Length: 283
Image 1 (spheres, one colour):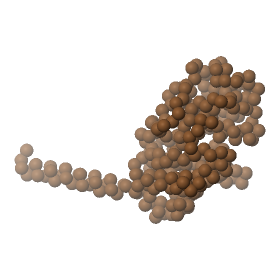
Image 2 (tube, helix red, strand yellow; image 1 turned 120 degrees about the horizontal axis):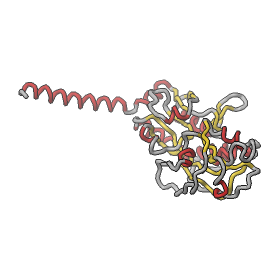
Image 3 (cartoon, helix red, strand yellow; image 1 turned 90 degrees about the vertical axis):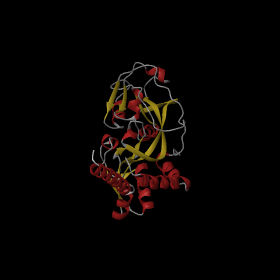
Image 4 (cartoon, one colour; image 1 turned 60 degrees about the vertical axis):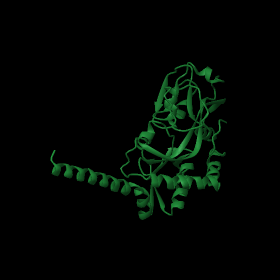
C-alpha cells in the first residue's frame, strides 16, 4: 500500500469516526426535542383493558394508564395524543417515530428489552388463578384437568409455557405449575373472561390474569372468583420507549420518580384499583 493510499485510508477512517460521533450526538435527545418542539406527546395505549385503559360510556379513553400518560404530558408541558394499536405491534419495537411512549401496562422482559427501553417502573401486578364461581377448585392443584385461557403474547402466556423471563431485579421467586394443562390463547385480556362466564368447564376451567383485571370483572358482575392465597407471579410494569434515546428515557424516569415522591402515582392507583400497586407486594 502506498503512502498516499495509506493517508487517504486514515483520513477516511477518521472521517467515518467523526460522522459516527455526530450521528450519535444528533440522535441523543431526538425524541425529547421533537416532543418539546411540537408540544405533543404521542402515546400508545390500550382501548380494551379495564381498568388500565378503556373506552368509557362517553366513548372517551379512561383508566389508570390514561391518567398516568396525561400527567406525564402535563409535566412535560405538552398535550397528549393517544393511539390504540395492537399490543404486539407495540412490543415488537422499531416504532420509527410513530409513538414517543407506550403507557400500555407492559412488563419488561429479556426478549422485549432487545428492541425496547423501559425508562421507569410505575406499578406492579400480581397474576392470579381465576375460576368460574361454580368451580369446586380451591387450589392450583385442583386445576390439573381443566383448560386454561390466557391472552396470547403476554407474560401470562409465557408463564403457562414455562418461558417467563422478567427483566427486573429483586422480585419474589415464583413457581410454575407442576403440570401441563391445555391452554387456549386469546387476542385480548377480557375474552378469556367472556368464555369463563359461560360456566365451569363449558369452554374454560381457569384463567391466569392480573389481579386488577380479575377484580374489575368481579365488580362488573362476572360470575368468577379468584383462588385465594395463591399468586402465580408478580411482575413489574414499565413505561416503554423505542430503543435508543437515553436523554428522553432519563427525563421520563425523572418524571415518574417525581410522581411517586409527591404521591400522584399512588393517588391514581387508588382511584382505579382501590389500592396502592406502586410498590411490589405478593398480596
